[in-house]
Amino acid sequence: MAAVHRRYDPSTAESWDAVGLVCGDPAQSVSRVHFAVDAVEATVDEALAAGADLLITHHPLLLTPVSSVAATTPAGGLIHRLIGGGCALLAVHTNADLALDGVSDTLAEALGLGGVRALIPSDIPGPAGTGLGRVGELATAMNLGDFAALVHRSLPLTAAGLRIAGDLERPVRRVAVCGGSGAGALSAAAAAGVDVMVTADLKHHNAGDHMAAGGPALVDVAHWASEWPWLQRAADLLVTDLGADGVTVDTYVSRIVTDPWTARL
Image: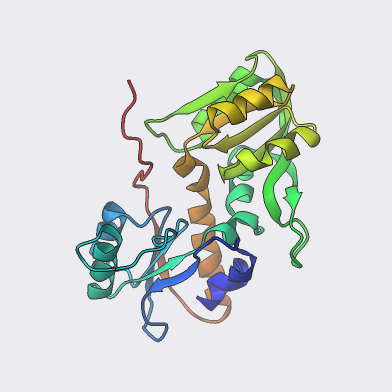
C-alpha cells in the first residue's frame, strides 16, 4: 500500500472519492497482486482463482455510500468473498487520474502522443506535470477519420465502440486526452487549441454545445477502454518500486471487459 500511495497519493483524490483500502488487513502477507478497472463478480472470481492476495482496482467498490455490507447485497457479497479468500481490495481512483504515470499519461502514450503536458495543471503541491488530462502531439498529422481509426486500434475493443463529432477530413495534430469522464475538461481542451479531444461518457448536450461553439473535434470512447491501459503501467511500477526495496511480487492485469454495455444493435 505504501508503494502504491507513493505513486498515487490518496491526499490528491477528489473530495467525493473513496480511495484506499476497502477490505483487508494491512499486516497480511502479499505475494500476488491482481489489477482490474472494476471490482465485479468476474474480476473477483479471476483474482481468487489466481490466488491473489491483493486486488487493486481503479474504480472504488464503495464509491456510493451504503448502510450495509451484508453478503446479500452486491457489494457486500464481493467483500465477503474477498475476505473469505484472503484477498484484500485497494482502490486507486482520482489520485491516479491526476498523477504522473497515471490514467491520462498512459492513454496519451497508447495513442503515440509526444511532448505531453497536463491539460489542467494541478493546484496541489507535487511533481511538475501532474493534473487532469494531457495534451500532446502526433508525430505525423492526419485527418480525423484516420485518427479515430488509430484510437480504435490502440484501445481494447468494447461493444460500445467509439463515437466521433466533427468533419472526418479535419486535420489533426494536437490532441487532448482525459481518461474516464472528461466533460468537465472540454473548455480547457478548446482553450489549449487542440484539434481533437479523446475522452469518455460525453452527454448529448455536452458534445452539442461544445461543437456549436466551434470547439475541437471529439472522439468518445468507452469509459473502461480509456482507463484500462493504466493497469499495466501501475503493475510494472509496483514491481519496480518494491524491487528497489528487495521485495518481489507477482502481478497480473485482468483483460476482462467490465464495461457495462455488452451489445450494440
